[in-house]
Image 1: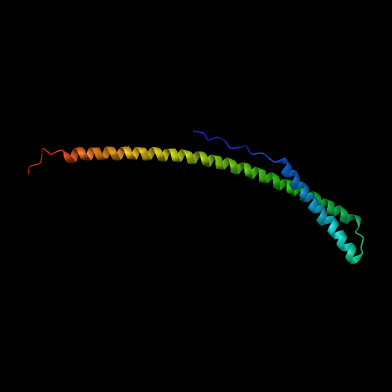
Image 2 (image 1 turned 180 degrees about the vertical axis):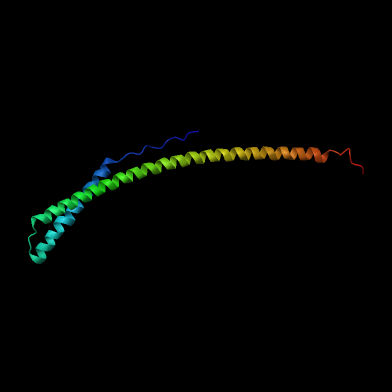
Length: 129
């Protein structure tokens, strides 16, 4: 009694690429463009090279974090699918057992009624009165 397996889990590579590209572009916008614009407009300052280096490291670490979170999401999704399949199999087995027990109980009830009818309707030969 096996269930037809649903579509295997697959990674949509286009969505992963869009996610990573969005993370990179938002980091570049947040780290490079906004501070340069604000500092240049407000204080007319020029930012030094180490700020750019730190900004690039920040972008790199955030991208690594995004990839790591995505991988852990994939692992968790696979585990959830495995557990749900297992629960589905167990649910089917329990349903089958319940139906079997229900039919056996119905048979026992019928048998019990037949025995009661036989012994209650039959006259008792040992009865004195």
